[in-house]
Amino acid sequence: PLKEKGWSLFYDAYEPHEGFVYDELAIDPETFKETTRFGFFETRFPFLALAQDGKTWMSVTPHEINTMEQQIQEAHGKVLTFGLGLGYYAFRCLEKENVSSVSVIERDPTLIAFFKERLLPFFPHPERFRIIEEDAFHYAGAMKKEHYDYAFVDLWHLPEDGLPMYIRMRGLEKKSPATTFSYWVEPSLLSLLRRAVLILLQEEMAGSTDEDYDFASSESDALINSLHKLLKKNEIHSSRDVHALLGDESLKEIALRLR
Image (cartoon, rainbow, N blue to C red; front, side, top):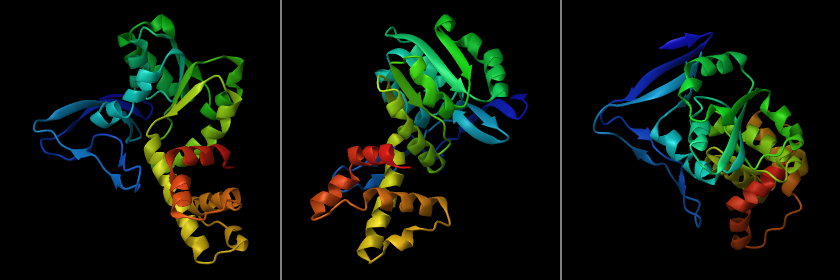
């Protein structure tokens, strides 16, 4: 492996018949039933991985490839991506004729230097590629100064740590109305948000009051408290209303309005 100040670039592998998640959750739009897409290879499958202090941040696995494919297809014009990793998303976008440039926001100077030395020489069209050393949320709050056509956000390790960042970035979208935003593993993020809304509905059906949402002992509590404040004026009269509330478009709007 290649190492630099806590970062390491190395090959890992799935062994024959070792199970792994190969794609995003499959979610039934009628029942919201979640199905994990699980598979294996019959022969050993090596893949490139990037880790910081032993924690893998990105690997070129079927899951990473499949969960970015739609956003790669949608990318066009001036593309912005939040989070560098191995640069897989940027690489694939640079291969597209309808992408004029790709800019990456990354705050870690060690990773940037490591990437430029070890990976950038293999990239197509380096003249259309740049890395901006900046905090993602600070840049998103001021990016209207420079127009982008398409933005892809990939800042989290797992959906569980990503949901607060997803909600925060959704709140910044309105500052750049001309830019189309997309998010890595958004269905999984929305699934977590849906579960929180369901918990809130169950609590309120059991007779909870406003005072029950004044204190939070965890991030989950804080999220449910915020949902209560946001949705307290919503009226639900039927199962159809519940279904509409739990749909993807409704949840995206909720994430946009949460504080």
